[in-house]
Length: 239
Image (tube, rainbow, N blue to C red; front, side):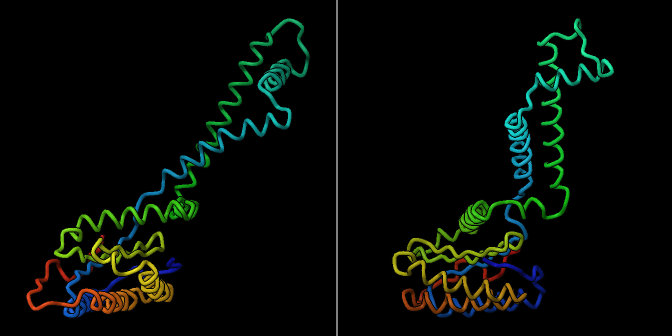
């Protein structure tokens, strides 16, 4: 996982990455695409989930400590009467209804307060579990793989190098023709180097290294042929 990243790729960085892709594809029939995403998904929904969870759990916690709607209603009735116990007044049903109104009001307030934490920049992403981020980034990478026609290459040799900056994650997705010959462990090593470079703020260098390593891997199983055609653009895509 990428811990810290330099989110800026200069024009020189982009040109260097494009040149690295072009050079890599002189060694292999594989097609390499690099996609850098600022943020994979909007995580605001997670705060709505947490808000709903707190709103649901809070009354259960209160009841576990002996607080129930009837008790709240009776206390409110006594407060209205200036501390006197009234023999004729609110019925038990009235007190229960009043207590329930307090519970509902408490739930609404808690829901709004927790949901409002999303107003702080990056708070929702920080509170999103890592496994959700991992799934979202993988799904986004797969979508980009399809969107850029990497599944349509001759020989099924498309490779996507995907970086999501906000989630601090990177993935490599290779088409079926490659996965039959190259194990996942090999790609993990490539991602590891990319992550290390990104942590040091050298994202462009990390991407270039990942491209070069991918070309070396692909050239063993999918060397470039004389009749190979460059099927996809050799450039970094920013989304």
